[in-house]
Figure (cartoon, one colour):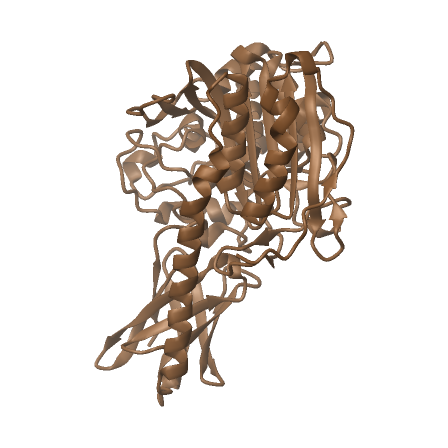
Length: 503
């Protein structure tokens, strides 16, 4: 894989207490990160480790923009994406502690017209259910419709009634962003303040996170911001647009930096205190860490179970309880981890959206503090990543060759027209220069092209490469198109949508 950016290390103040640091942290961490960024083609990364009530290590690596080569520092903003969820869960747990609501309140108490696909479930689903990913839907179900869309928060909530569950209510885990939005929208009903105002005033500012932003549709206009990149579907780094998630804010919209996240970690590890001041009651934090949903319970080796609380995962690792969450945005990944028994916290932010190195780095640091024999986890994971990347690029190359060899269709106009999907809404296809052009109407700027290959196959390419490149087909009746199958990056949503052509 071609590397198109040199790794630049920004030397910032690094706080360490060398006598207490594992040898990997003292002697090898910086080289490990620098090499990993080269191997995984990551432009910029920021990291903080807190230990025993202090910042033990904080540093920026690489660049926030490969054109300007401006270095990352400990105040550089990244999307933390789904690490937003614990802020929402904490806010609602605090409101319960203050007697303003119960997490076991049914959601119809606050939104009488709220409905899920199964009407019997609609009247039972609680705030806790929504915060625990257990309403029966599949992971990411509906997100192609909701992610970066022009829909309002209330429109997203209303469309949840069209999400047909794949599992029984409260029986299985299915990660649900629209659920967190809905739970977060209880906050304005109870407090008369929007989610973003209440969370900012009651959590972010008291914790001392002075450069953390809760609404980020204006991300490009903020100061000291990392640019988002991907090498998925391309092999080489490609700049992608900033996500626009304010309509899903309680699930994903926060942007922060490792300086601020160090305070969030210290707050978590000191039972709701920061700088000696009790910001939130310990009971509130404990509530967020109760396991409400079993994610996995038949593990082997150092981890035997994974569960989910109120915006945070939990697992055992080498006999210790580890709380953590990942966050995935277009062109950015975050990980926040804390281990109260070890008084250890880790936050890592990157501006490339492949997860491999970030996950390896997080585990490598845990290994160091848990005295696990050293195995280079980045090197171990890299071959499989490169193999899958090459397979994907080869597949795309084969499709491109098919287009070159294909005979142009003479009836392209038959494919033009308006298509619809019950959940998503309208899709319009037009013809120009032997291509079909797609415009998705629940998004302000989502477009794609379809080019004919052969044997009824078409190559679907989104203008925003983050959504992917796929082979797809029209469904025909008497030789005429009646529907088209639209796929997206599984990072957005796993299952395809079938759009029906209007006659």
